[in-house]
Image (cartoon, rainbow over all chains, first blue to last red; front, side, top):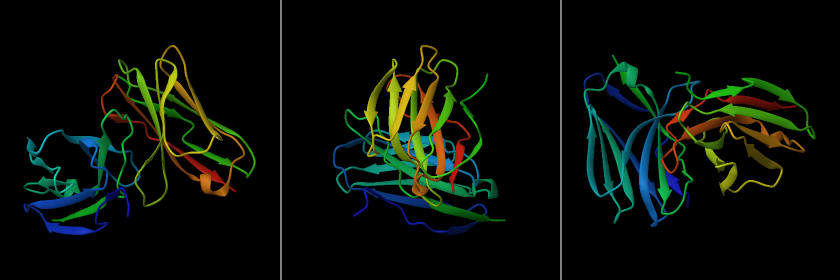
Length: 111
Length: 112
């Protein structure tokens, strides 16, 4: 079992729709969770952080965390073609500085 | 304000050689983390440097070593290069215990 599992996609959604990206993790000690966006040929950029169960919203992005289910998700509302990228989920364990990245989900937003 | 800068951008080496990659963190950041990213995979943590010490290390062999200088810049050294070391090497900077916020553009290392 991989430490962090993400559907590789591509997830294809029409412009204006809600894109839902999911991630499961195996380390129950994970305390912090991060979502990174990586455009093709570019480096990752941090877009969302979540530390406690529930929702964390920032503009069109909402991160959701359920530690009991070891599940974290990212919702992108009003998806735009510019959101087309690979989204990487990265939990971090308690007292750890190491992020464990999933392989990412490729999102395609159709105009 | 310059972000994270890495050099060189591309490098071609042969098996058995040694390589040094360099990273300058974003201004105000004191922590540097190094990641290896194979094609189609997420980045894998190599190690993190803080206050000129290796603070945490991932599951990489001793062939991978690093250093952090007083100005917070960092080097990644890889000895006895293997074909499997071909990857994109990313440097990320952050402040103290925060998550990597800013990644450099990476160094693409190809081993022939």
